[in-house]
Length: 222
Length: 213
Image 1 (cartoon, rainbow over the protein chains, first blue to last red):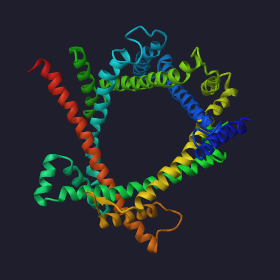
Image 2 (cartoon, helix red, strand yellow):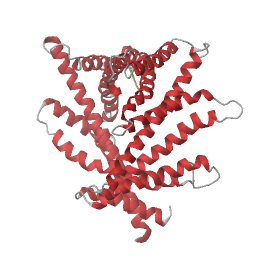
Image 3 (cartoon, rainbow over the protein chains, first blue to last red):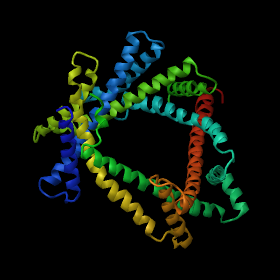
Image 4 (cartoon, chains in turn cyan, yellow):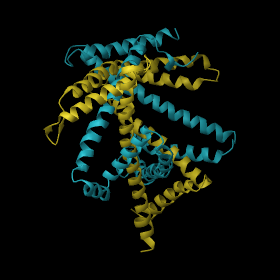
């Protein structure tokens, strides 16, 4: 029961989507059913994210309750979660209050614009420093392959800034255009295609394993 | 932006940049707040765009209430049985698998067809076309793309030892891959530098500029 019921649910819900792929959306029953299953999937998927939020809350709450090392930071995380999420949720129950909800002028929108975006931008900007040290290690031209990596990365970085483009044009007037055509739309495109084809075959195989109940690791143990 | 908003943004920016010196309590404060705010953002987003729009509004519509949506609601609530782990209700943890299996099954059903139809066949079709550069058919580019796709696929084919013709093609594949990764690395660096310029511009122009210049 603990294994069979979830496998049956996965098989039936997956089969509806596979069969619906071969039907027009206006075919009675199956066409509407596949649309409904997609909506149901979004709803249940939404609950999985809420479960993740509940898990974060539980972990941080326990750390604060048990006064674990650095519990003050757990408290900040906990307070931040609720300060951000509560105004959005309260908007459903108090639609007239301007500060609640997720629209422009709400607390949720204000915190996203003036707290989340600056921090997100800074976190990613900080990677510029670490990527420079990683580049030093990766780009040392020890082998032919590493040299290719070094040359292409340097070329693309030069190509993407006005000064670099001017320098490339000074070497040969067609060089920026050649980089665009043969490096980005040629070699880079072909590798991306190869990777996409490989990943898609892998995803399709894994999907089939899930539908047939061969792949069950998502269920966890027990 | 108000003065408070500018100073708040500047404090958070400098708090995160302080990690470049070393790990410190001010950075950890900003990091914890960032983690919480990000989680809260997704809770708000999911609540508004999924729970309210797909579930609450259709179910409570007085003219045509979709009562059958109690099924995904029930499946969704079953997910929370996972939190019973380690409690007296631990024997019911397995119920969370039903909701999870529904998501996995329907997603797998969609992926099985869309990946094969959209990505495998779509990318193969694109590779077999004559490529064009600046609107003109380009023979060399077409050959590069075809050789690149085949060589990349063969490099990632591990069911046979890379010797002989297979080894040579795999070697060509690794050259193509290195060029592509180099191009991606270059793009990523430029993206990060662009963000860094944005933050430094904010500190210099908006924050320092508000009281120094």
